[in-house]
Every structure is written in C-alpha cells, then in structure tokens.
Image (cartoon, rainbow, N blue to C red; front, top):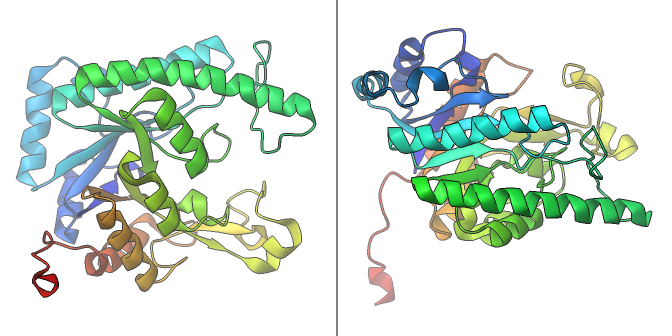
Length: 320
C-alpha cells in the first residue's frame, strides 16, 4: 500500500514543483485532476490525449521524482438532467478513461452523478426518503437512468482496461455503500468505489464494515477524515447546509487525516483494506478549512506513514 496525494490543492504551482515537494515528503503516488471539479491544472486532457511526446515528458517528470499515478480524477455529473451539462461531463469522463489507458494508469475517479426526478426536470434531485411515494417513483427513475449510463461506461472502460472508481458523495445518486454495491452489480466489475471515508463518517457508517461489504469492488481509496461536532449535530442533525466556511456552526467538518479519527482507527482502516485484498494507494485529499494544505498534508503523510504496511504478508508459520 502506498501513500498518495490528490494534487488539486497545489494547482497554483507547476507539476514539477508539486512532485518535488511531495517526493521529499515520502509520497509515492499522485492522483491528477483532468477535468470536472478537480480541474486540470496538472493534466489538461487536450494537451496530453493522443500526444506521445507530451505523455513521454510526463512519464519522464514522474520518473525523475520516483512517483507513479494512482488515478486520473474527473468529478462531474454525466447524468445531469440538462443535456449540455451531461454531455460535457460525459466527454470529460470518456476522454479521461482514454487518456488513462494511454498513460498506463488503471483507474479513473469520479462521481455517480445525479439525474432529475423525471425526464422533465432541469435540476438534479437528491432523494433521501421513499415517502411521499412520488419520491420513490422519482428514485426508481433515477436508477434506471444511472444503470443504463454506467453499463455503457463500463463497456468503454473495459475496452481500455481501466477501472472507474466512484466516490460515494452526498447530492449524488450513489452516496453510501449499498448504493455503490447496487451500481457495481448492475454495471459490472469495471465500475467500483473510490472509497472516501470522509462522506461516510457523518452518515454514521462504520468504515471497516463498509470496506468489508464492498470488498473487491474498491478500486481506489481516498485518505480523508471528518469530525462530527455533537453540540451542533444533536440539535440539527448531520444533513447540514451551513457553508463550509462557517466552521463553528457546522455539524461536521472535513479534517486532516488524524484530526477526526485517531491513529489506531486509521491503522484499522489500512488493515481492513488489506484483508479485502486492496493494495493500492491511499490518496490524501486535503479539504480541511482549519489548516493550510501543506500543514494538513504533511501531518497526514506523517501519520499514514506509521499506519501503512510496506511489505507483503509472510507465511503464517505459527499456524502450521
């Protein structure tokens, strides 16, 4: 298992500078945004897709710093009810899959997307309860849209030998493990999870149990923490629309790894991932508004360096 970083917080500096800094910290993998909400500061698709020279330069830069790419990231909504929005996101995703294949990267991370509640809607509709029954009917419609779309994308991904890791996220159709399992089973093995625990903590989901439940449907992992602040959550719950910048009034906040849950918890996360056969990157995603990107990242790398296993398991000689 390797420590990685989603490089989005460093979009204001060059990829060379970013890689130099990360390598000095002991980071081994980078996740590069190439569209959608992560942006494309470090990997503009139009500059790299089908360009052998640009791709060779990228590989040379990464080799210079001893880094590999864990995934390409393009988070948007390809099943948005507005056709132009959906088409843009669909293009971003398909081109990211194609570029990943050309670069020898085996995973693209993204969102499931979210349709409207009917073919006539213009705004995505996040449904969290089955009653009144019109909401269940809308939810059933959304799943029809999603299963058809993602089954098609699974074929595209399979043609390119690339897995798609979907981040379970609020305001998306897939936001918790049972929905992720449903989409995985409907669309096929190429469609799995980018397992980001930060969105699961505030929902009250047990992270180790979620890892066991998803098992080999986990294609990529984000290392990102969350802290639930009970003085607020006990009053207004956790479906909190308070702006992220109004930290003192929120029920929960994204935190740097170790500031929501301690080292023993993250060691359990690492161990459970190993139990289900995951041996890829733990890609740190920094979105802690209480500290700078550099400090939060450096503290996360420090803690995870004590949690990850660097060797493969040996023979269980004591069991013979």
